[in-house]
Length: 44
Image 1 (tube, helix red, strand yellow):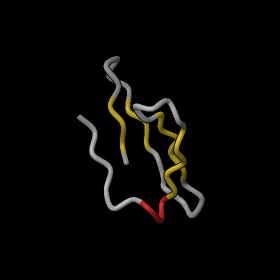
Image 2: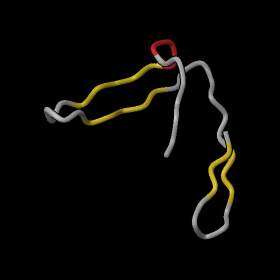
Image 3: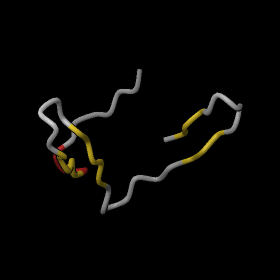
Image 4: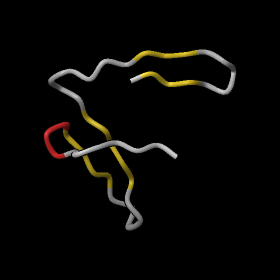
């Protein structure tokens, strides 16, 4: 995955075996999203 920053910089990310995203839900709880639970990641 390549991230394009507003400054024009590019950051390349590699998704390995131990990939986690932590997300705060509307109810205020923090959820750990493991790679195995994700079908896709969409950034707007």
